[in-house]
Image 1 (tube, rainbow, N blue to C red):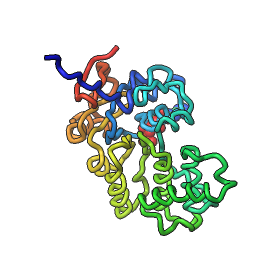
Image 2 (image 1 turned 120 degrees about the vertical axis):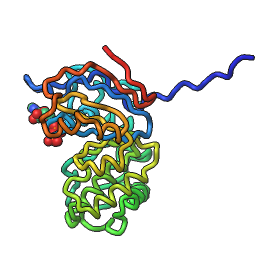
Image 3 (image 1 turned 90 degrees about the vertical axis):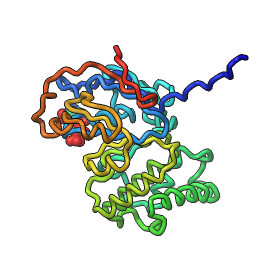
Image 4 (image 1 turned 120 degrees about the horizontal axis):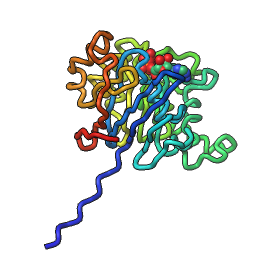
Length: 279
Ligand SMILES: Nc1ncnc2c1ncn2[C@@H]1O[C@H](COP(=O)(O)OP(=O)(O)OP(=O)(O)O)[C@@H](O)[C@H]1O
């Protein structure tokens, strides 16, 4: 009997291969490889200056690597514009929430979702088109708990509420990969709890890559972690193991044996759970 054909494994949502970014003599991201499956909940942690934001910039396309490749769902986007990456499903929230204070809460989300909407043409000239946009924007505000504030000017929001609005703006394009840069920074414990509940409830169709200094947020949300130190991958793996790694604690305190050490190049494949030598 002929065996039934097996389905080809889905392409990783994100595949970074030997990514390097130099600024003059400083190597901010140094030979970083990482493969994440669809729906991943992955955190990137490390001390200040480790290269975390630079890595997010390279994935989002606001910065370009000197070396290495970036693939999104099997499509090479290394040279793609930020707009094309956004259309392919990458969305991003920032350390400083990018909110337009003069607009209402609702219109911030209408504007963020507009380029992604199938009926985007003429949205501002046609009241019925605008209503369609406003309806989907309202759903995203529900998701982040801001629906009651939809018609307030965004300038009246608290810091925590602006962060939620920034998150709703990132969700407005129905992303497949959500990049979050320190989403818990400056939040109260209550706001952090709300953020965790919102992110925890996102569907598995949305993968998350999270840069975060709050280890408890990482432990709660991420199922896998990459630790960067001086631009290099110190360790990548399941959250509990990565956080328990002795060199992680050493690197955080900048006293450990990792300083100046040359790690072997490895790519940890979080699709298959294997680690392989590359290069
Ligand atoms: N545009 C730039 N030009 C020159 N150097 C830069 C630039 N962007 C980042 N760097 C340097 O690259 C290194 C990594 O910076 P990056 O912001 O990625 O670190 P980080 O891990 O996000 O730090 P933090 O936790 O403090 O935000 C730092 O030494 C930083 O000064």
